[in-house]
Image 1 (cartoon, rainbow, N blue to C red):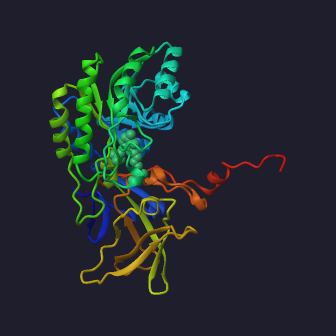
Image 2 (cartoon, rainbow, N blue to C red):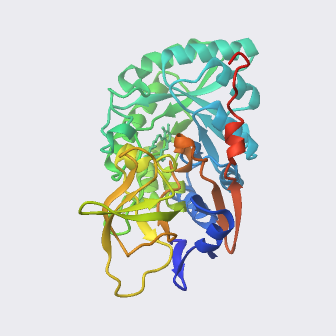
Length: 421
Ligand code: LLP
């Protein structure tokens, strides 16, 4: 069910007209639908039932504390990849025993803070990290629960920048060496082996690569158990893709993903953890922007928006496609025309779409980038000293600003001029 629909000719988020939000806080802004976030979380949780499971939302995809509170209150755990994300999860009220800590480069300081604050498990990605964690935990007189992230050498068949499960990628421990490293882990003080972790990439549009990876995890579970390790949790990472266009894409549904997990891993009596980000947040959010100018170029028209690559970097970074739609529904029979949709940043790379068909557009008209909830606001920057784009959460017929647009005073005061200048 899509919660971003036209009502009386105006695009709404749930029951709030986007024109009302724009009039209140200005543009550009990100806008999220609470109903969509809730529905997507529940789809995963229901798909894994009745297996014991924890859906750990990948905070990296959308990290606003209000969103984390919404999901945490539904029972979600959190997947964090930095102590900053850990602090966000805790600030949202998520208990430590629902937080898993992933990432290839956890520092000793980060490990210490997470251990002292409470953590469900560290997903350890290398032998040096394992040894460092053992030392940190021992020094605190504590025990760190761990899963080793294995790299199954599976082709996720996704964009090269977001594939993580091939042996040439920096992630995880080669699955062939896992038994040896589990043997070492079992001897290290301050370490308690609880499971296996795997994550092969993001925006996967087929189940097959997941299934290949999970089959390898199933085999490894049996092997490690036969060697005396207690494997009680399997963390399967995130990565299930979403449709970015409303027409031709149909990635597998969480229900099919869940059925495949039960088929490949259900017999192992493990608690299943998953770390979805994009599927929960992606289609729950949009970026709303305003046309600054409609500029006639040589053989093409440029639609210059007040949003730019610093606000939504996915098109310039991954050549990603986001549907762009007008906030005011075009009258029937209006003929679309092709535009190059661009932002005001001084780089040719600040291009959202080339020759995209849109209804005729004029200065001041509002447009929406769909599917922008994941890896949108979190990847924004203040490049060109453009204030970080604000975020709004809608629930039913009301909305709240969940991150305000900084003022220029806020921005400028972060710099300081040394007294010797
Ligand atoms: N777990 C781990 C260990 C991850 O590295 C990731 C994503 C996830 C879970 C969540 O994956 P998801 O369910 O969202 O696919 N900025 C890129 C995507 C980077 C993904 C990084 N890791 C983009 O905009 O497409």
